[in-house]
Image (tube, rainbow, N blue to C red; front, top):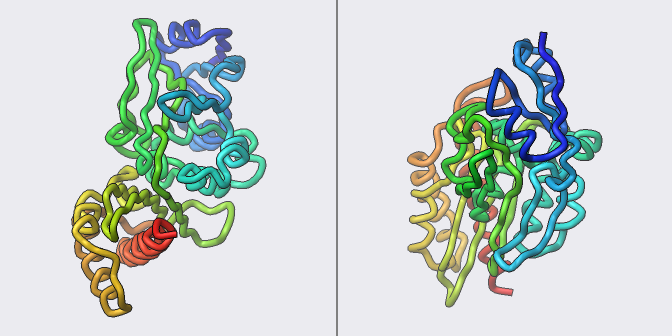
Length: 287
């Protein structure tokens, strides 16, 4: 039978996780569901709830530092209206319902490695870096490439995700989630776009999409396409861009059929949402 272990320090937590068949948990909003499905029943649970130093948001010289145990409701409160970080606030506001947002953590959203995780595309678009700590030291890795598949990440045994660092950005960002209803719904598609622009051309652009492959992913072909375009000055040119986005996204994403939507529907939605967000950002960057 599994047992609950409760460390008082990060070092203790790393020691506990470095040996045995154990898994860390914070808000436990995913853990309860997983155990109902028979997962983790044979593993000891290392609860991180006493590690208060892993919760909170602070501003430092290199950017925003978000503790891995920071809840979604705090992220929404702090970052709403804060430039490009407003996209992260928007994503946090759409995770589950109020109870989940009050309890669930951004670290859990990352480490659960769900292809539909709402905050992950925004973190990818904003070039977030993950701080991973173990008994032997600390390493920093980009969130891009950190997810290896559904439920799988590049975290090592004995490591804890302690914080997420997001560098300061001068451009604008948008997030859009499409689900079967406005709340309490798993994403059919979610998209985050970050843009910087000068003299009518895009100078920096990142696009990240969730629910369109085995992990959330960057749309590199679509990014490259858009960097060659000037802002369309007619509806005909916007339609032409839409068609080119659809072609580029076909190389970037591989959505599947499941109980929520077909792969072809997801592809159509992704085409439309990327165009919508790019158009919004193009106009926002001109103001």
